[in-house]
Image 1 (cartoon, one colour):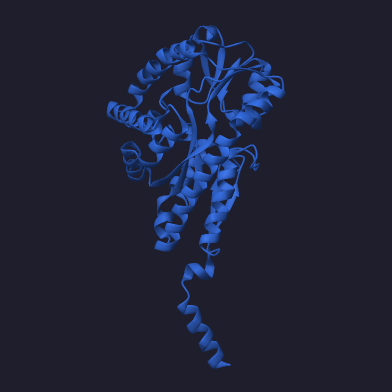
Image 2 (cartoon, helix red, strand yellow):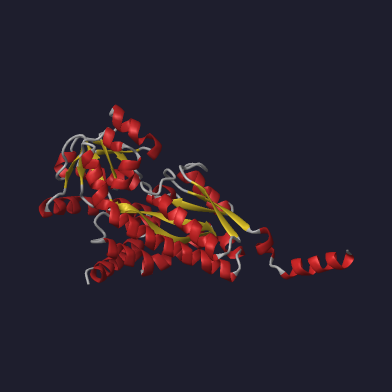
Length: 337
């Protein structure tokens, strides 16, 4: 018996602690656990499976959709202070890293490919990742495509900025407030969980989201018109507590980082393959879609981009804005090849 016990002890000492105990990580994000309608859940589920397979189950990812662990600010505090993973929107980033809003300048990207080039390999993103880690202790792993380019919804036709005059629009964050005001509308920040009721009761006349979120929120029930202005690339940010990441061994960290990127590539393919189908679905629910012509798009850009940049200059250093615009121009050129 003593020899058997001794042998077991030797075997246990030969096995890394992480392999014995395993590492269980909570992952929080917005939206329902529905892969067909919620691209962030599609990403999270794909990421979970890739990580667990690559690490032979040494790392388990436990998913918490529907903001179960708290709102955007609460979840950001959690990932800064504890061993979790969080997928944050711009609303979550604004209090800790407002410089990221330079990537959300209206009409910054000409195509999906350009956005991919920018977020995967630009000097701006290299600087952003380094600064984010130094300031918050959080590592930014991927910029997750969540549903295509943003579109406006409303209960009156919107073909140009002039059609916004006098309306009240739900804003995702203060940057959108600035843009709506430039169009002649009032912008009011309203949490996602309250958007449907706000539109139904007239607290807001319209809002802006990619088609996938319009479907998730059943906003087609309370909005009649869909304006496909492609104002901003729709994305969220995969964040992990830095101490947690550093606690993993080299193989585990490599597996997690590779899984994050592979899951993002798969999510991009999924999202972009579904855009036209989602628009058709919204039309089948009674929404009337409209794609602004070149002149109307030029009007949107003429008003929307400068107003956003003027707002942003008060929030962050001009050098971040200049770097984002420069790198986006390079990405647009590469994306057009």
